[in-house]
Image (tube, rainbow, N blue to C red; front, side):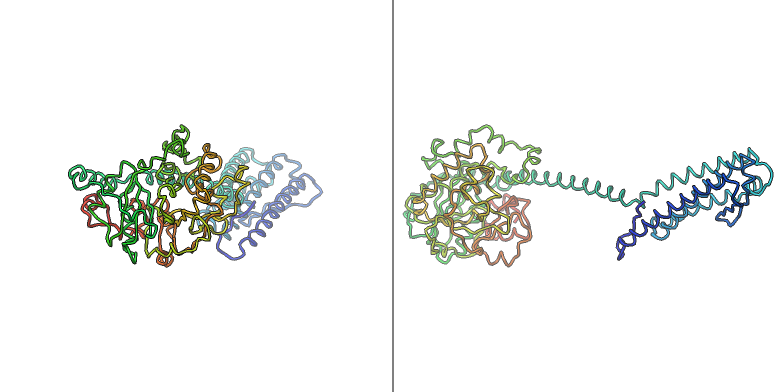
Length: 553
């Protein structure tokens, strides 16, 4: 029997091992002695035996008497059984006292039990009639003594069986394993539920954002004369200026990106913003920038996806794939059991990852045919420094300049692409370092020379059944710009402010752009509060509709 030793003392494993060996040896010794005593009592050649109780009472019997009276033999067997249980109880008592298990309760329990056995044998009625009498054994007294001994033996066995759990290390280990397994199951279930609810929160439009869009639409409807479209400016196609591409359906997120660029620009009048949104948010976006014009003379062009007539299902694989029933079920069906199947990809289980607005980044040379370079910015970034130095970087003939995100074995191509597929395995290195979308300088001339859009179409068509990669635009980008991406210094782009709560403020302050990638966007209630102020300081809180819609700045 293994003995559980209280943890926290030095050498407890060593002592536990020897306690176990000593206890087992003692038990076998007791069993051996008990067997010998029964054998000896059946042979007359031995002298008188002496049996000692815990009350120091001695009982003298001769083998001749035992042989002449069968009841004496029966009495001896009963007496031996009682003594054996005294030894067993005393052994548990000794270990309970030494190991201090259940302290007073077990000490008292075993001590009382041993005394009960001893008191029973020392009881005058039994002592005089059974142990000290030289005459025949009284059958009635013997029967009563046997009954009481058996009752106490039964109680002793029950109590010892109950106490075994405190000494049985293997049983305790198994119980601990069962507990750990149950806790892990609960943890896994909580993680899955958390991933699902986080996904729902990330997909949903916050009430404040919906309110803002509706207020801006009301303003457009109430005063249509104020919001007529302006003529295109020549700056929109001037390759000598600094051009930005921002594709988003989030009005306030667009305004934060634009404000943060302009406020940190040394020459804001040389910056041009190309905004593309969806038809639902086009009017609201235009009204916002009419009511709150960009400061510093910067220029802004606002368009809708439908303005680009070449984007048709016959040309764009994503538009064709959007009609697939399987893809629509995957993206647009919110079922909790989906999280159990693919919890790691729940963050991609968002319809925006298959929207044309999100895949528009792969058509930049066709969207802006007269430009040579353009900086692509996600709508969940905040610019903290002047970015014009990015246009002066030597691209070395590469198409895309981005910050690498790999570290150790994490965020490498193997994490995003299915290398069990022969096509992927033959074309790409699983150890290749991944990079991030969100702050990307694109050389549009190199793009055209490398025919990157054609490469994107080729792989996107092959992935219609999602066997090459699961979801999102990043895997498609990693494939499209494989071997044509130049690595930028990490201070240009600090990531994971929507995922990681442990990013140092030193790293954040050094970054030219910070990126709230992940589910915890700064305009959502689930945003991390210790990062949120980095975004809200660029929100135009003087705008009347921002105040009216309770953005909670």
